[in-house]
Length: 282
Image (cartoon, rainbow, N blue to C red):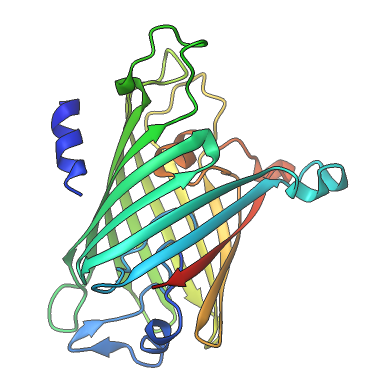
């Protein structure tokens, strides 16, 4: 089964900038009968959106997640402890995107395939539906600590269905059923195959500013797990054709398997992380 999933996935944040964003001004709600600009960014905060990279465009996304702000000035509010993710996404067509990334969290490498299945339209589907599939490789595992370690143990997989609807010119919502599988888990009670549901949305508070939030519910987390469900809030700010994504979250890692299964922060104790995304389009 693992080999089948691997073969299927192997077949394969930010925000659109400059001309792309200016082409998606929110005052224009439909284009060729299709709803546009449900989300301006490729991510809500942690979860993917149904936005696609246009055909023959290459996006380079730098995502940065600082350490917890809880220690205060001692750790300079998290600035001394950071995780960085570099992500390239290319539009094979307007409905097919390929991505490759590297995160400093567990030295994680990822390849992704994003496919548009259905697009919201005035006279057709009330939803946009996109599939998002990834393969991850953990480069931080060491044979010295895990004598039986094999290459297969380093691999993880994730499959998501992104279902979004632009409810009004200001409000967009999304649901994200998720399956993810880790060949190696840290807890004996934790199943390798895991399930989650993500919920998120965007609310435009002005022509250039929106509030974003998403939350992930892990459906079969081990009872002895110390990890939390990821809750994130952020703001998108458009300036001169660019959008800056700034956010707070209780999950420092940024790949699907890691933020869903390894979120350690606690909003109730101010144990949260500040982060941002930067984009370059080629």
